Length: 147
Image 1 (cartoon, rainbow, N blue to C red):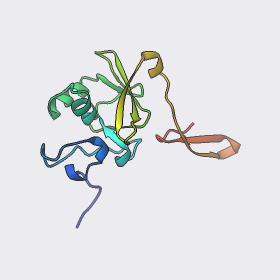
Image 2 (cartoon, helix red, strand yellow):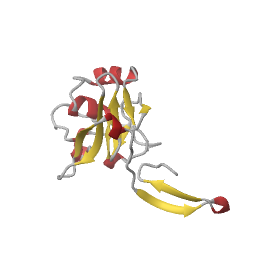
Image 3 (cartoon, rainbow, N blue to C red):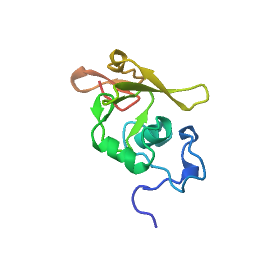
Image 4 (spheres, rainbow, N blue to C red):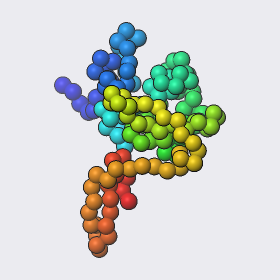
């Protein structure tokens, strides 16, 4: 009998756009609960280790995030399994690099390098709009923000 949310994710059940190979291990890092769904995100560990190749192992990637060097949308993220999703800006302080998460033609996440000036802007898709208490209008974006 299962109680609570799932805590593990097998490698073969991981989303295809993560591009993990079958033989490296049994498990894949399951993304934490956050602004993007499990099937529509890329955990920071996969971004640092598999895409950018800044870390060789899980523990090296953990040390990078624990030094508070990684920012997602301008906020420092120390959770190695934080879900970075569509149009998120991932910034690395030491190298001065900024990346925007964009899908390529085949539906995989392409790491697109951007300038520091462009990194200050965030593109959002409006998912819902309505009128709140006392007639105040609001918007809900694709990454859970309410404006």
